Length: 114
Ligand code: 5GP
Ligand code: ZN
Image (cartoon, rainbow, N blue to C red; front, side, top):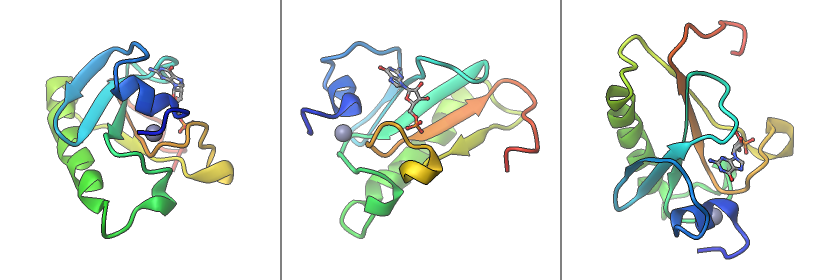
């Protein structure tokens, strides 16, 4: 755990969040500033700074995030589809330096984002 990291502190319960899912590897909670009816942040419980920090020692956490995404999408009723976004680094628009995946859905999303 990184004491200076917002998401590490949310995972530790030091900062409250609206939790939707948790297991040994993953913590997921609703984004404080939702961009769609469903906007959930799916976060590895290990502090990994960003997509550039993924390596052979921690990639299991990434796999577990995507297993969780499939479960959460079902839980949230997103049977018609959804989008998963990762912002990496300054040019990617990342503002919290703890790897996270935005799970976005509940509406027909614009095809223009990607
Ligand atoms: P990024 O821009 O790094 O990809 O995404 C960070 C996300 O974290 C943003 O969508 C922002 O709204 C969300 N966020 C920032 N601070 C908090 C917080 O304290 N609680 C929650 N639930 N979300 C937060
Ligand atoms: Zn962290």
